[in-house]
Image 1: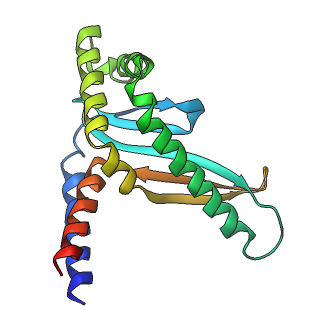
Image 2: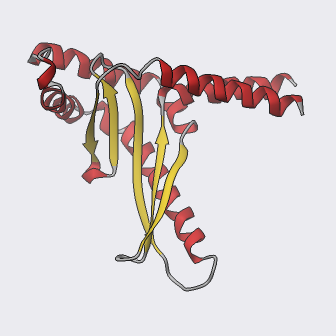
Amino acid sequence: MSKVTLLTAIFITSIQFGCASKLHNEVSSTTYIGGSIKLSYDKSGNLLHIDSTASSRVLSTLPSAREEASTIAGTKARRTLVEFLNTEVSSDRFISTLSTSLQEGFTSSGETGSKTDEKIAYRIQEEVRQKSSGLIKGAYLKSERYDKDSNSMVVVVRTTSGNANVYEQIKRALQQN
């Protein structure tokens, strides 16, 4: 019982800390890999979250068919996230797309300039690189829905920079007990 209480307390604290510290900043996002990856960040260059979206067709009318399709879509979304973190983040295209998105996203604030945007893009790239393994391990199912038009389940898997730290804390807590 004490492990569950400890893990719950760590999780709730980390979510509250992560959310409270970033509520006051403007948020923008950049889309990658044909729209299936959405990287969200504030104008200071802090990573807020990465969403990976995937879908899978429902192949039968059995009660478990939607659940199976959701599981497959979740696996696809996680795989896309891993591919993004392992390949796309290291590319020059990542920086150019992010810089362009920064210019478009924060133009109204008046604090944009190509050098500043590029610095912020490199800061985001470095944060994602440093935390990539924790980001992968901390990914969770954010939402799932049934799309009647395509007869498929659409799943969004999300990871945040805070989740990367929570995973390590939980792992250490379980190893100590």
